[in-house]
Structure formats: structure tokens, C-alpha cells
Length: 588
Image (tube, rainbow, N blue to C red; front, side, top):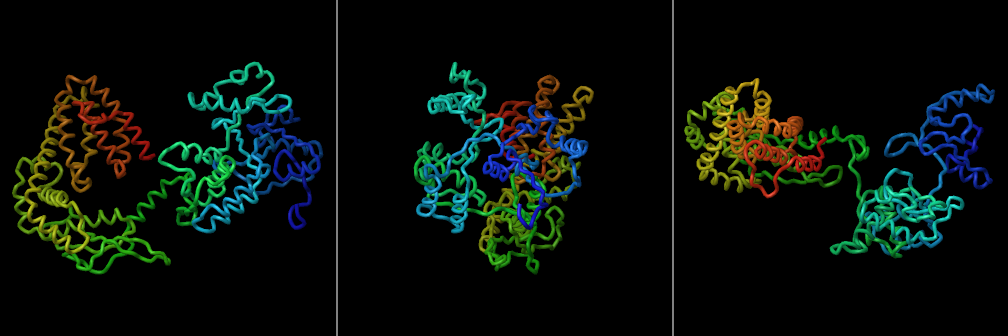
């Protein structure tokens, strides 16, 4: 305590705090630790044995009061150390641990010499940071009391706490076992399996290694083992927190093993922060931040004055902008003032220039703007294509919208299919215009054929569904209707990219084939539904997530294989493959 802080009433518990422990060593106080690793008082503790320390606190106060040992009791609220990972209060206990001595073999000085002479730092302040940490750090405690991890395969004498005389040999034996069986090879065996009759006098240590020791030896386990890598590495890069972690543990283990640093350079990067300047960490719930991030990056940061019916001469797609003195890349896009699906034949609305921070959003918006400007220039070509819509197609589409909507969708889809390279200046746009005039009708024919295949197949499916007996086929009918709904056939051209909606015909044909076989395959069909339904639920729940594009195709491929006929693909789709892709996407 100090002369300027505290109450003046002091207790010292050498078994429950670093400062108290050091004071206890100085004055030869007994280091008594009556609390077990589970936070419960040990059987040797008087009065409160078996009680959890937090639950025992009120009882301790009551016992002091009953015995006239309590002078005053007044609860106060104050800060208290918590575990950085679990966010729970820490219990301080003095326990036996394993340490690496920083000075006995010159480990500290060797690390400081390497920092001074052998390692380059970006930025420069990284050198002072790691240097100060190593100069002031205590001995390295490498043992942890976790239930699972890389073991410390020691055997200590029950009376003297001395290591078994064959320790180096035993470490090698355990290492070979783990190579064959994994870490469970150590935990599933007893001491006698390694040291025979000596087990009567020795205990197997069940501590695990500090994870920083694990990651800190990657220079030995990875760099040395792979031919395409080299040791020492040219560069280690991580955040500034790793001066205390990976940077430091790698340096110390390499100095101990190789008497040199494991890297020639250290690069320290910054961190992503939220709007309050707080670091975004793995442990925080990021769903809200991700949603807000998408909203913010997709929103234009500014809009230039004026509206254009033709491609502007001075347009520049990629631009640089200074933000608080830092040059940041930004992207301009020609954005239509009205959605294509809302246009009518005489609409004269054009495009405006908007600036985005997000390149992919700028490209998406710019593509819509280019389609809008091309549409203005089509003239008689659009009328010629509209005339080719046959009555059966218009009739098949009619439950979803009128003929004018179908015509508009056909023109949009045709322009979408023509555009390969997006024009970002006037000359490129003029070249695209020439290409559109040459190939619009031929692309239109291809698009029209896809439209026919989709909507006429869709109409056939609807007709067959109406004819099925719901008391027999109800579950199967529901499943097929779910599939149709998920495809968004009412506006699939506007909501899906070309490569997605052009795949629709084969999926619909698979559904038709399934309907034809349905009466004779109910048992097989119901088994397939049980396998597909969970994936349908997931797709419905996250249907707005762009990352699902790959998974969507895979689910459809599995459906076709289950309900109609196996697809001839290099790697057949299975529920296991779907699950691996789902986990890889990281969608919660």
C-alpha cells in the first residue's frame, strides 16, 4: 500500500495474489492455498470446505459477525480482474507451475541482441515495444491447467517432486505415440503404461503447454519441415498485440533452439475498429456490425449534379479521394434514377453519377446504369424483339404479370447477356453500342428460348400439382412449391445474375421428371425430402445472402440426383459436402 491510497487496514494472503506472494517469500510467510482448481474450498479448509468461494462470501461475513470479529461491513462497487476470453471474474491461486528461466542460460540477452542487430521493424516503434517487453518480463510460465491441449509429458516423484531420471527419453516416447494416435494417446493412458513399476512412486503431470509455446515453435515445426519455405523467415506479420504473444514466443524459442531469430523482419499492422473506436474482435458478436458495414459501404458517399441520357465524356470509374489526409480509392458509377422494371416505353429518366467506397457495389450499380443508357438507344430493335414473344409464352407468364412486364424483362435479360466487359469510359461504351446493334436480336432469340423453357415448364408443373391428390402427395407438393418459390420466377431476371437464371430450365425439367415418376416412387421421394428439407429451410432463411450462390447450385444438383437421375459431375454432391461448404461460408 502507499501513503496516499488505501484504508490503512491490510491483509496479506501469499496464496492468492502476486504481490502478496512476493511479500510472503520476503518474510517467510506460509503459502496456504485452501481453494481447489474448481473454485471450491478444499477439504482441509476449516468451516467452509466444499463451498464455492463466491457462494461462501455471505457465510464468511455472517460467521465473523457471530464471533464478534466483524468491525464493519459495507458493500462497495469496484473494478475487478476478469478473464479476457470468458469475461468471468478471476480467482487468484498459488499453484505449482513449470517455468523457463529467462536469465540462467542467457535467453533474455540473446533475444535482446537479436532485436538490436538482426531484425528490421515496420513500423520502427515495433522495436522499442518488443524490446521493453522482453527487458521487463518475468520467467516464462509455460504450463496451463486446461482439460485438453499439448501435454507436458513429465513424471514427478510423489515425495520429492523431482523429475523421472528418464525424462528426455520419455518425452520422445510420448511424442512418437502422439504422432500415431494424436494427443488422446497421452490422455487415454496411465503412468504405468510409460514407466512400468515406477508408477508407484511417480505422478504423471496433466498440465498442458501455454498455447503461445505451441504457436511460437512454428519456425521449427513448419518452416523446417516444408521445402517451399525457409528458416529463418523473411517476415512475420501480425497485430501489435503479438509483441507480447506470437512475435515474442517465436523469438524466445528460436533463440533457445537455434541461437538466432526465426525471422529477418517484423511487420505490425493495425486493427479494424467500430464507430466508437473499439477494436472489432473475434469474441464480439459481429452480425450487427457486418450488416451495418454492408449498409454503409453500399451507400453512395456523394452524388454529382446533373442527369444524363448519354454516357458522359468526363466520366472516370476509379478515382482517388483524400480523407483526413489519407488517399483513399473510391469508385464512380452511372446509377439509373429509376429501376428498369419500373420503366415504361416513353420514360425519359436517365442516370446520375454517384461515388462509392465499395468497388463491387459500384460495379453493380454501374452495370444497371449502362443497361439503362443502352435501352435508350435501342429504338426499333426493342420493338422487333417484343413482336417475337409468342402467345403460349405470354399465357404461361400471365399468372405472374402482364405482357408489358414480360417484354420489359426480356429486353433487360438480353442486354444483361450481351455485356461482358463493363465500359468505364465513352469510347468503350460506344464500342459496346455497336456490339449491341449487331447482336441484340440474336442474343434476344437465345434469351427468348430460355424464357419459353422456364415459363412453359413452370406452367406444366403447376398443372400437374393441381391434379395430384393432396391427401397422398401433400408433403411432396409442398416441397416442389417451395422450390418454385425459392426460384423467384416472377422476377428472376432482375434478382439473379445471368449465370444463375440461365440454369433454371434444367432444374425445372428435373422437377417435371420427378412429377412423372412421383406415383411410383413415394417411399424414395419421402426419403429424399427428409434429406433436402433442412437445406431448403437454410436457403429460405438466408435467401438474401449473396454467399449462398454456390450452395444454391449444389442443393439443386443434389435434388436432381435424388429425385430424378444422378448428374454426371466430377465430384458428386452429398449432404456431407454441403455441410462442409456451409461451414466454410461461416453463415450462422
